[in-house]
Length: 253
Image (tube, rainbow, N blue to C red; front, side, top):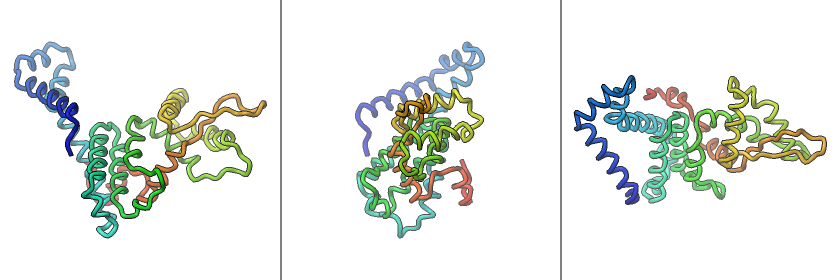
């Protein structure tokens, strides 16, 4: 699969600049000696950093994917789908998202979504359960955002409403009273900052009580797209972790 011409040109220019810098001994000497304290680190980043970081993250992605696919068995893999343009697009998206991800949890998540998509069972997915969408859901979240999101999942996903219970009352009872303890020792102001990011990403909805004597502060309800994501993951092994690789006897890069 080819990249867009614009992206190809950008990558080529970046590679050219790194190559020119690496060959310019005077420029490297200036960076290493003139910039106090951080010069050597900058020099290393400009010469080796992007390649090393990308290789480490890709190795971790591939180790997780190897574990997920190995436990499937050939009879569960949709071989025809592997030859499709849609799989090529999804593989490319997962690899790019993994190379850009600082959090290993997100890299493992990308591998788990990809391994779910290649299974024959995924052909019988719910309407709108698109692995391309799922790859993008967590792309802009960091580890603390995901930590808070998983707190919402732990308290709301798969949990039934009481008869006649409103969305606000459900969210308030299930999450507002317990989330601080779940994400501890995260500071409360940090937690609300993360919640605001989740609201902005469309993963959580802010609600306000309509009762005159109800709570004055908002409650937050997990959006359906997150429920779909976690239902989909539950079919294919659950939300992943380092333990997935370690349990299979494969080293974590």
